[in-house]
Length: 144
Image (tube, rainbow, N blue to C red; front, side, top):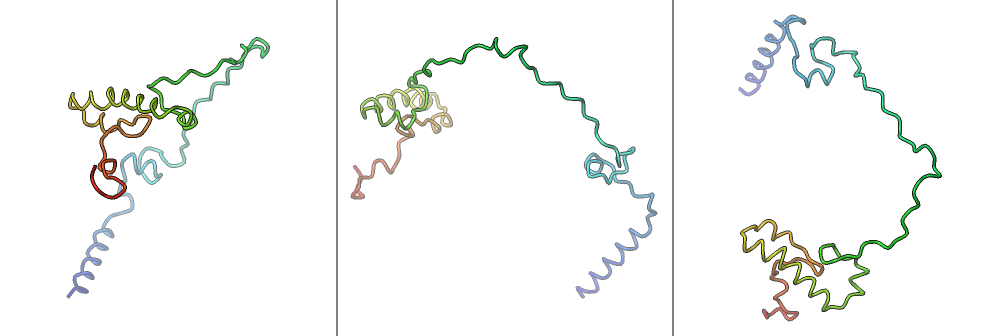
């Protein structure tokens, strides 16, 4: 029964496609043109012409270039991420103060204003500002 249905489907599909002359089927659309099989106006063999690139701008003389700056980099305040090397040099109290300051502005204020998405992405110098269940569990497995 299944074979008969499948065979009749194949035969009817072949007859339907066989009734079309080669010029009757047109493939229109940008996707067919991009693939090179479209029947659009002359899409085959046509290459895209690109504009010539402008030349690089070179200073007239290399002697007149300014000297590179030798000053120190900007000092990081509480708004920048802390470098791991700097973190080791800071005291634990300083890190906790910066964490509290950062979380006050970037976690507690958005929570008060109802901006849950901004508060969820707040990560200070000591890690995320959002309270964690894992932080409240002691090493013995009991809640603090």
